[in-house]
Image (tube, rainbow, N blue to C red):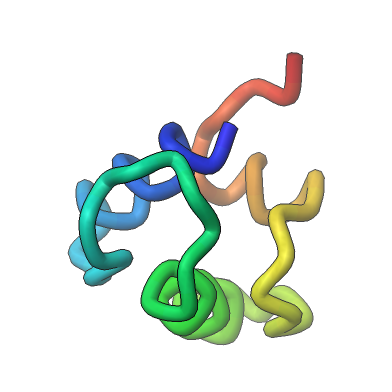
Length: 59
């Protein structure tokens, strides 16, 4: 799931760092910026609302 989020963040123009599948500090910063821009609570966590905004299906 983290890898998919990293790829989606990069696609949307954010810089999650290396696509490793690990929730790194860089990924969290990019995730929080994305969440803030989408008016989602900027937690740096992968939430259902964040997945919806990134257009990723929670499986």
